[in-house]
Length: 380
Image (cartoon, rainbow, N blue to C red; front, side, top):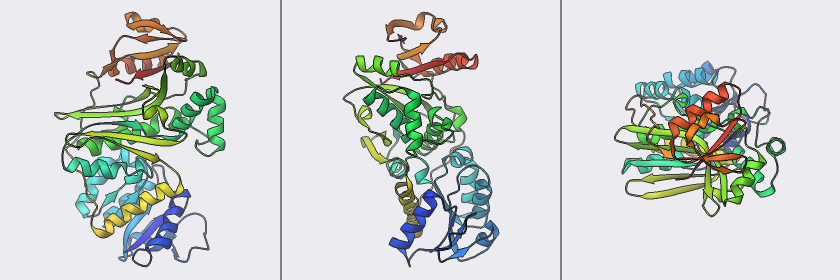
């Protein structure tokens, strides 16, 4: 099998190394394509995507440049040429999920994206395998290492949010612009991908109500600890009778739970299956070699014929109106909660059980008015 790798950044170069050191000559990198020369790589350095897709020897194109464009154009050109595609690009997969799968079905090419949610953790792989033998009832978990590092370190050290974020950036866990992480957008995309796999649905990330941790304070953390609680940013998904619930929000767990004890930038993702029950997957959700390893596993799956496409049942409506639990809410003026407020907790209040749909809508209205509000749901 011959492979082309587009983008020799952290993950792309890691994939090249694993193929070179572990899989050659059965799997060979014939082309690489990057703006930088990488003279030490002894293969063809493609000048444009046409050079790759017009070569009948190329079986798999690995997209590792990230972002929407030109990654979208490169992937669609590859699929139209009958080349299978492997990518870790969660932004692109979550946005163009239905279109890309329909294109792959039309051309007979495979589209694999296991590392797009969970990085090095075999999350999507096992979600798919479990789904074949019985319904996935729900999933939830920590699926963003940056926010987990921030929350874990704030909990352990008592530090404030801003210096903890700065430290995460210094360590390479957070980008210079951390918005996608701290506002929950990264988790939102991974939640959409996971829900589509779990429930044979087609859900857009924009349909998933999402709250991040931008406005959390060390005082919030102290209030949680006083009650034996730990905060984590969690994705949630559930499906039943063709209906899907999906949302992302900070969530409070008892201090002795698995989620509360996930350290630093690690991930913990859990599914509940009809027959298999509760299964949890723990490990590095990002990083050069964990993510590259997952990417190469997708290549090998295509090579040996193990790649499997999920069903596409059409668009699904996300409905969180029936999911209710208590919330911790803190803001300058909590009058918008009305009679939902039940008791004082630190600088905030604990609400009566309220639907996810209503709480996210109330908070979004306040944020739209420029009022900083932080809220976290209690783990049911």
